[in-house]
Structures are given as C-alpha cells and as structure tokens.
Amino acid sequence: MLFNYTIDGFENIQHQDYFSLEKITCKLMSLYRSYGYHQISTPTFETYDLYVHEDSIPSDDLFKLVNHQGKVLVLKPDATLPITRMAAMNHPHSDEIIKYSYQSNIYRNFSSPEMIKKEITQIGIEYFGNNSPECDGEVIALAILSLLENGIADVHIDLGHVGFTNYLFDELDLSETERETLFRYIENKNIGDIAAYLSGLDMAADKKDIILKLPTLYGQPKNVLKEMKTLCINTKMEWVVEQIAEIYHHLEVIGLAKYVIFDLGFTNQMNYYTDINFKGYISNCGEPVISGGRYNNLSEKFGIPRPACGFAIDLLKVIDYMEEENLLPQDDQTRTIIFYAADDKARAYQFAQKLRANHVMAEVFIIKSAWDDHLRSLQKNQLYKNAKIYFLSEGQFFAEKNGEFQPLDSLEIESEVN
Amino acid sequence: MVIRFALAKGRVAKKAIELLIELGYIFEDYSEKSRKLIFTDTTGTIEFFLVKSPDVPIYVEKGAADIGIVGKDVLLEHPAQVYEMLNLNIGRCKMCVAGFKDRPIPYGKKLVVGTKYPVIAKNYFHTKGQLVDIIKINGSVELAPLIGLSDCIVDIVESGNTLKENGLTVLEEICDISSRLIVNQVSLKTKHELIDPIIKEFEKQL
Picture 1 (cartoon, chains in turn purple, cyan):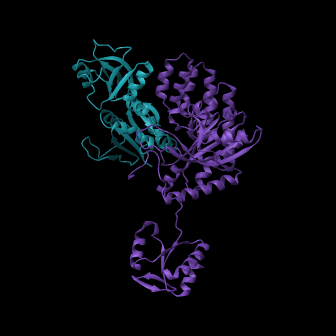
Picture 2 (spheres, each protein chain N blue to C red; picture 1 turned 180 degrees about the horizontal axis):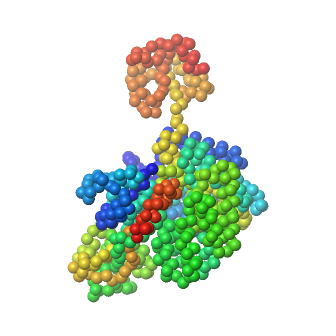
Picture 3 (cartoon, rainbow over the protein chains, first blue to last red; picture 1 turned 180 degrees about the vertical axis):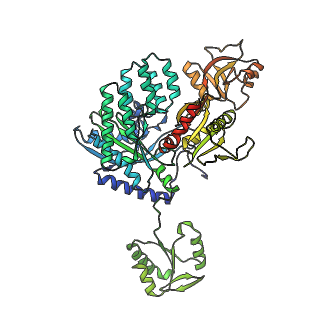
C-alpha cells in the first residue's frame, strides 16, 4: 500500500487551479504573441556542465542524475540559460533579433526542513539582439501587463541597474572578499554594518560616503535619479544614469511609469545580470513574483555574443495571490449527465454527442440500480455539484423535480441541445 | 494600511516596546501579563505581536509582518531574505566559544561543540578550517561540557556570570550581537510612505 506517498517540495495541482493555470497561461501567451514573441520549449534535463561554472545557481541546489553513458545530468534549474543556448544554436548571426516566450517547470533542490517548493512553474520572455533602452522598456512593460491583464491592480516594479555599483567599485581597489561583503550588505540595505565594515577599510572618506548612500537609492524614480547624478565619479556611472532615465522616459511615454520605482541596491552577486535588473511585486504579497533583467554576457558562452533581456514570472505564486483576492477565472461550464436504460443506449449517446457539439460537457452512464441511488451518489460528488442529471428510459427523458422523477416533453429536451 | 511588527519575545521585545512608546505610540491593551496575541495602537496604524525569536525572520520574510525586531544571532542562524536596516544597539552581547580555561581548544583533532546555534558554529569552525562535531542543544548549553557531552560550547555571552558559576570561560569571540530592525523587502517599497518615517524615528532614538 502506498499511503501518503509524497515528496517534500512537490505538489499536485488540483483541477480548479489547473483550469486557472491554463487560462492564465493562454492569456499571457497571446499577450506575448501580440508583441511578436514565439513560444518555445527546452528539455527538462540539461547537462551538468552547463551550470557548473554558473555562479548564479549553487551546485548544491541542482537535482543531479547520471544517464546510461555516465554523463551527469541536472533537472533544468532555470529557463534562461537553455533558451540562450537555443537562440545561439539556431541563430548564428549575432545581429539577429529573436523573441521567445516560454512556460516551463524548473527544479531547485533547496535543502531546507521547511516546505519550500522545489518545482517552480515559470512563464516569461527572452528578447535577444537588442541593446536599446526601448527593448528594456518593452520587457518591463510586458512584465507589468502580465499582471494587469489578470486583474491584479497593485503592481510594483522595482528597477535597478547593477552597473552603478559595479562601476563605482571598479574605481576602488577592493579585494574579492571585500567586494562580496559590501555587495551583501548593500543588498540587505544594512547601512549599520556597511559603516562598521568601511571603518576598517583604507579608503578615501568621500568614497565611503558614496557607498553609504547606495542602500538608500530607492523610491520615486525622479528623486532617485537626482540623487544618483550627485554620486557619479566616472563616465560609466553617468552612462548608467542616462540609460535608466531613458528607460523610465520610455515607460512614461507608454503610460506605465506609475508602476515603476527605482532601487539601485541590486547587485549581480547571485545572478547573471549585467545591466538593468528588476523585480515585480504585488501589494500584500510578501515575496517578489517577477524577476528579470538584462544579461548581455550569457550568449557569448555559447559562441554568439548577443545582448539579451527577459523576465520570468512565478506563476503559482501569482495564482495563490489571485485565489486569495478572488481573481481566478472559474471553471463554471455546465455539465449534463444522462443515465440510460440498456435499450436506450443509442439514443443516449446520440444526445450526448449533440450536446458536446454545442460545447456542453456531456457524460453517459448506464442505469444499474434505483434512479434515486444514482442521483444521490452523484450529487454527493463535489465534481458534479452543478450537473444537470437526466434519466432516459423507453425513449423518454426524465428529470428530478421536488423529489419525483417527471417526464420531459421533447421540446424541453430539444431546448437543451440548442 | 497597518504596519505590523513582529517582536522576539523576551528582553528585546520589552526594550522594543519601550522604544515604540517613546516614539509616541500608545498601546492601551498592552501589559506584560496580557494574553492577547496582537496589540494595536490607539491610532490604528501600528500593530505588534510577540513570537519566538527564530520565527521573527520568517514572519518578516513571508510578509506576515512588515517590520521585525530580532537579535543578530537569530539572523545569522536563520538567514532570511529581508532588509536588515538598523542596528538598534539593544540587547548587546557576544557570540563566543566557551569551555574550560585549563583545557584550550585542541588543534589537529576533532572537537565536539554543543550549541543552540549549529549554523553559526559550523560556519565559524569551517572558516577556521577546524574539524568539529556539532551537537544541537536547545537550552542550558553550559551543561554540555560539564557532563562530558562536548568539549566546548558556542553561545551568546552577556555578562559571563553563568559561565563563571559553572567554571567555564570565554575562549574565543566569534562576533558582536545586537538587535536589528528588519523589514520585508516588498513592504519597504509598497508601504514606503508609512515605513520610512518609522525607520527615521527609530534612527533618531539611537
């Protein structure tokens, strides 16, 4: 007997949720398609080699297995890397523009005693071959629209640029550990510990002041931009300010700027982003649901240098939120059940076929016991709670009304079909 | 909109509530003996609840609380995706390795460590390149070396009195510990105009 045989971190999706998942996926895919993105899919298994040098995903978090040739495989831990490779393989001219959308499950072997989902359903886009602020703008716009289209109004996009901190740090003579420590503190907005850590470093006081300002660079874009301008110490940092200002302007033009706030506290410690980097939040939902950014150096690993930008949505997190807010599309299609006596089989099946042709769910069962028993056992079943139930005997349809089975005239039955 | 605080039960919560009261928030129904779980201030803008300290980062990470006040020891032991915005400098103490004075930590052989903080202990000895067996104990950690369960302990030391009374001393200091104000990463952005002034007020009190 296999009782309670489940694995931590993996879940069944119930039929109502799956219905919603399908509806939402469909809606998003047609949104992406209307912007010219083609849906693709990559294998569930990848070679371990693809991820072994990728700092963004710790090796411990990979599900590994060995195939018949002794090759080490992993369950795909992210969607972007395989899609970048696919783009590189299929489109060898690096100046080509390629727009892909995808829906895929990814797997992370988080070691935690808690119930953390290890199978994550992602939906998203990747835009290759365009390095302009307009491309960044389109990707961010689609991230916002993905949530708006599903009736979620309280959308926030947190936009940052890893270059701002990187170009500042390039100027300073920092060791690898110092850089990492500072990055971590900046990501955590841990100003107290930055100050304490900086006091032990040999660095000009004005540079220390700039580093201390980094965690506070978040909030209203206009204010943050003003603040950023005062902190630039080289032309590269000024370039970052120009870029991010232009992206913001783009979003203003297309009317989506109100959903965007800035946060320059993102670093590329645990990801492959090279330029902009953004997260999508929904009010009252404590964790980000969208993650995206520009990764211009990734395609190079597959022999084709090509800029790229994209995002992924954690679909099940969005569905959980929509369920709480009663925003989920409901499966309210009616279904019709026909119980038939053995002699009326042909009639029952013909009738069911007609209903199906009219997009009504129709099911037929043979009458095996008292009509009452059939009726009651079906009504007890949650899956059939809104079903219309008919009994067909000697060429005549019956329906239950006030505890009695009453014959229906042919007109009533015909109206069902039409 | 309400700003929710998760406070770690114990000394730290007492001080944190004092801080909140100093900031001008009035909690009419709060008293130390109260059995209520959630307390709301008279203006209805702030709520707080008391939970076991290791739960504070979880409540804040998941967004069940917007702000948490909890010791650095807990944040090191249970790392969470939160913003660690202020060092409140209350509940100050040190994370230490403690043991018998006349029996210094042996090098080159495996050491047995009893602790409430297996993650911190593991990271510390790992960086030092020392082999250790870690035994997780949930309380009265000082007992472990006394009855031969472990060679030494890793624990927070405030005054050092408990150690002294049991014939133990601090052998190595691992790091300073104090209470931190942590903020949910989404709340900081979506409830910016409410949370920012609160953080500024706390900053002023320091």
